[in-house]
Length: 67
Image (cartoon, rainbow, N blue to C red; front, side, top):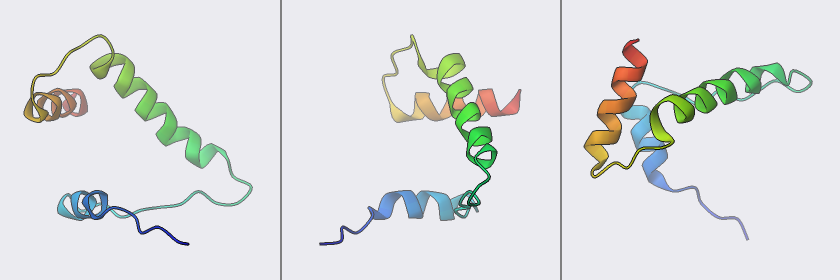
C-alpha cells in the first residue's frame, strides 16, 4: 500500500516558489549542504525557545534568513 504525501508541504513550497530537488546518486555532499542549514537554523533559532504561535516561529526564521 502506498501512502500519499500530505498536501500541506507541497502547498507551502509552491506558495514561496520552491520546488523539490533531490540529491544525485553518489554525491552525498548535496544533501549535506541543506542538512547543515537545518542544523544551524535549529541551533540558532529553535533550540531553547518556546514559541507561543506559528507567527512567532515564522518571524524568527525570517530574521535568521535576513542575516
